[in-house]
Length: 140
Image 1 (tube, rainbow, N blue to C red):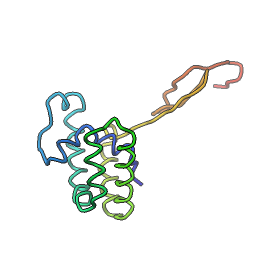
Image 2: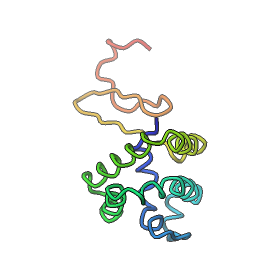
Image 3: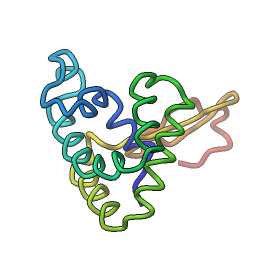
């Protein structure tokens, strides 16, 4: 199953260019996100766009999200439409998943929500983030 949150995170910076069918993005964006990420996003978009374009709700969701990428509601609507499209087409889902897995370092996303005091949270690659409250309770 494709992680649609990671997929949306990967596509988000490029959506205006992808929707227009542009082969170029701003030089600043390329420097910030990287040329490899742009190539991955383009390859994935080429697979997704025909399905998105043929489904009015999906097309509207991606256009709304491209205008307001920081809006959680438009992001959720886009994620939901992507999930529906991928759930309905197993071949497409496998192709997108393969592209994301082949390019793991640039298309992986880890979300951690940490609340409370003295938390210890394991992040990506077993990096420890947080503070150990009391060493007497911990065996290492």
